[in-house]
Length: 263
Image 1: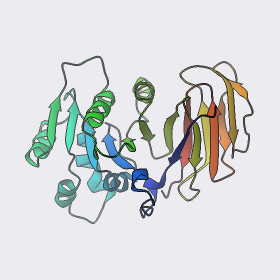
Image 2: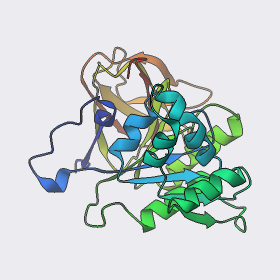
Image 3: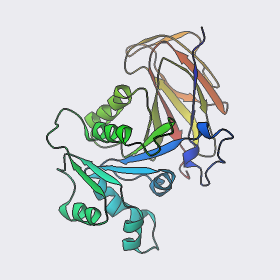
């Protein structure tokens, strides 16, 4: 029996939002999480696409300091008021006291979870979003994570682990250079590639477990019932040749694609 198909798109990075789908049930609700790394250049755009904005602890410092830097020529105080997070959640060991007070005074919800040392700040933020979704009537939730890549390697691995912990939710890790998300083995996947904002370099990584069978279309070097594993073949530095890539695998895979610098 064929697997159900899951579709993926980076249309949230387009300068103008795509037209709404013909069926309202296909509309996507976006939430954004900001972690404690330098904001990518497209952070203001992603912020405006989201209906719910959450900062993970020191991510609030990055929004406070970084948004005015990304929007030169505008009044910094006006920018800080406009780009106010709905919630700040985490250990509260990184956020500066004056930033915490500033956003609290603007109405941001401050959620101190310093008692929980078993989960990462990203994990805490994803849990918050899933219990407080931006559109409770819309099951098509997509969570965009800024600052998930770069910095300490163990932090990056922890962030990728969150993709596996919440494999039923679309979560996209974003940096200036790349986009990363999980392809659950419960579905076949259609990845719609917009060459104006992403590609051509891409990769399929069997991070959670080896794959004994992965098949793709739309790539320069397609896989045909191919096995992949660490210590064996890993599909890195592949090239997107078509605007639709399909992937089917017997194991969860990480998909990554380069982002164009003008995105």
